[in-house]
Image 1 (cartoon, rainbow, N blue to C red):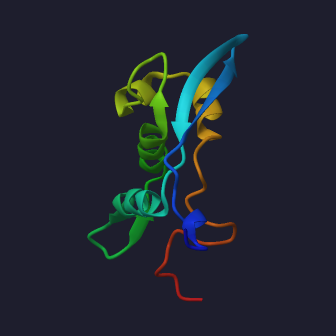
Image 2: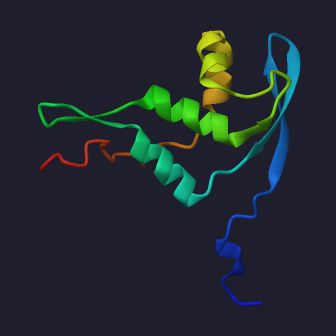
Length: 113
């Protein structure tokens, strides 16, 4: 084995519980790879006709959760499912989502400083 084997994602899943309204909801998640996160980020940029660029955080969170959550009592973690949940439960799921950008980094890569 080489000295850099630890740089690769293992693809392992983690079983955990989300507490909500005095119930424990079991889910199985997996960490996104660097490339998966970048692919999702790329799809979340919105290029406007006036040349401006926006970032769709709602889409980012939904796509990440859909990829990360491997098993859950509700079945697939789809956009339809996520559009129907209570804000309080959404806030619990949101904690699983890795930050789209590092602290202090603007999602507008075209801003001139």
